Length: 467
Image (tube, rainbow, N blue to C red; front, side):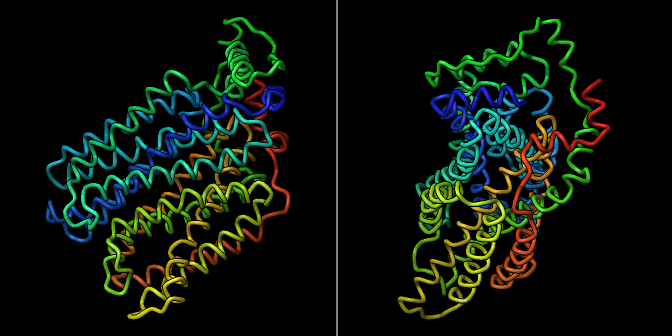
């Protein structure tokens, strides 16, 4: 909504956006921690419950099935009950399902519990993206959206730290204890969010809750020390209730898949698919690959901790670079220099029996370059998923795009187990990355804004809004 967006931009960046960033994107820190544990802990779970390769892969994949199912629902949830409540519900559900998973006694129950955890983890994802984007001045949106990746990397690092503290070799992990410890993190974020996280004033204004929007704008002004406090026009409680009718889901879908948006929806969905396949396929493969005789002689747990620790400054550097780089060039750079080059180097040097100093450098470059690819591509894809679509469909669009992306994480463990040869698995990632490079190159130089998207709404959706 133009007037609210202008008001937020006028009040500038300050503590209000910092609080929102930490608490809303905290859902990604929690998810990064839980997803990393879901991949690593399949090793001790397999040994403890005597599982087959297929059952082990299914335990990793079923989390992503839950994420895909919940991802579609989460966008709709955030558009109906609000961004804030969807995030709070996500924190509560993640802590509960993590504890439940720790009590599982057999494969069927753990499979069901992990599916529930995936659904729980997805509840606040789309809404957190929308909330951070809608609470930020326009000039700060790309940077704050990129902090999602930093928070996710902190979650990866926290998970690997829990694992290393238990057993750096990954051979004798106490997975039930680790899951119980991990459950305390979403509880902490949930309590802090209940006290300090505010609702999106844009969402409040769009749903007719003008008084609520004014209250949040006043809070932003106070937190940022701004004397510019623009108000949305006042309405009574009765008038707000009259305007609080929500757009039917079929009309939101008609926007996301309309002629104006369908190509962007396709490209962003495929980008998320590739990122998920590469990032989380690697997370599943690495605890197994790092133990191979031809790889570094460092214990697997320490290799994972080093990688995820390095990923934090990598994501921060990406933020600094991405602010001045177009979405199109982020796709191209991330695909070629991050994925294609990095994965080829890792396959080439990872199979060497003896490595020189240069070979070792290239080996670690191949291991870490995909981190740059993940950062650039997912930053661009996530920002576009909530920036180019109209407000009434932004969370729904982000949910659909994220849900399609989960297919990559879903199938990656099965593909790894079926191929048996780890090099072939990474070569397949290169093929996916080549397609992403082509699609990124086909994007227009100018990416439409939400305001331009509003003007291009399908006629059916316009009639529904006017009604």
